Amino acid sequence: MASALLADLREGLALPQPTIPPKWFYDERGSELFEAITRLPEYYPTEAERALLVANAGAIVGHGSTDTLVELGAGVSDKTTALLDALLATDRDAGPTTPIRRVAFDISADAIDEGKRRLLDRYPALVTEGVVGDLDRDLHRLPRRGRRLIALLGGTIGNYRPAARLALLRSLSGRLGSDDRLLIGMDLVKDPQTLVLAYDDAAGVTAEFNRNLIRVIARELAVDLEPAWFDHRAVWNAEASWIEMHLVANRRVEVELADDLALRLDPGEHLLTEVSAKFTIDAARTELAAAGLVAAGLWSDGRYLLGLWRRAD
Image (cartoon, rainbow, N blue to C red; front, side):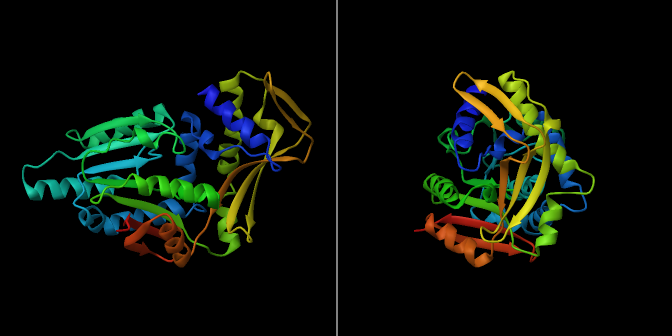
């Protein structure tokens, strides 16, 4: 993990705006904090996505006669029970068939193990496996068997800038078979106050989540770097149509991360730790079409979009 983190830091800290990829938020503590964020009154995306999943799970899993659920960035997998319920109900109605399978793909082995434990308590007959990997490097490791529903939920697609987002979508599109479907959750553009509050809650949980990134770097690279040296900031970038999260240095920071890499910030200088793009439905269609994907089903409550996509013929 340390070598992959260093590779990302070398690339990100060399940018005009020093940047750390948000995938490094999600160690065990980060996953716990994000779970807490999803329960905050200000953070609407998780409940909006969950409600859309519950209301439309049957249609989603039935569209491609799915028998395998692949969760990308699975975390602890508490949102996809609606899909598993629908899959297992379909399996029971159909009689003896190929067993329902679930594949959890995540950068955190701890999150995969915890998600597996929780799901097996609820679904003891579920055939489940985990793949530890990075969305940008390891999609080739996904199992190809079965009629797959590949789920990228939680607005994760919005954490990618346009060029990287297109590259990821094309990579996913190229791995879809004719019976496979791709399910993507996308947050929609709305008033800036609502958006900013979702990433800067009154209780400070998101701030703690953001600063946890510093703990991950300090632990993995064995360096003296303290979360208290940074303040959390969330801003709406209307031109780019995304929320930005920053860690702003509140003191001089000068830390050697490796023999050839240092983190140096003056007070007020900042690290960009996350962008979270917001979409319109028309923009979503256009971006997915550029990646060779067409809509098989779209569901929205006006705040959030759940899209089911298939490979274009």
